[in-house]
Image (cartoon, rainbow, N blue to C red):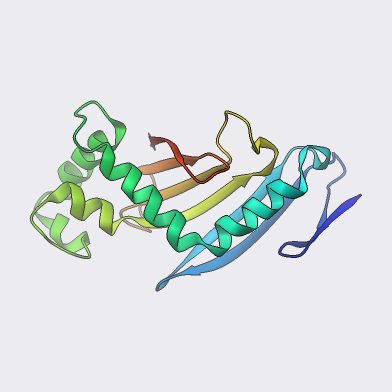
Amino acid sequence: MAIEHDYFGLLSSGPDGSIFWSETVDLGDQTVTVDLTAPDQDDISPDALDIAAALISGIENVDAAARRGMLAEVDDRTSEVTEYILQQQEAYGEELADMLVDVSGDDSVDIIRSLRLMSMTILADEHGGSEPFAVLEYALDADETDEVLLVNLASDGAVQSVMSAD
């Protein structure tokens, strides 16, 4: 079986009924890998595909919202964003300034501004549910992706949570 969509084209399911689509999109001067997945094509609604297409088409706005979500957690000393920032400061030490795209003197803000959006995974079967609909993966160094921040988005594009993964 297959699903046809204006943006994604023909989405064919695998032998187990799962759907997988992948593309590389431009975000400023970088490229981002975007994946759309669902364990069963019967769990994907046309609305979910429309929302996924809108997220991909508006990736600049999605990225800006995710960064605002990260900044909102900076003042919370127990947040995973704060922990990630402290890890990066410790890991890079004096060389941190070399990793930053803008040095304002506020390491937290500068690190979040300098994070590279590595990938966006859309979990199309989670449309309208409580689980993340999209997960954005950020890393300070594109070549060093052992420590990343994951921003979970609801299907309306709102930030649900930010987690570190290492």
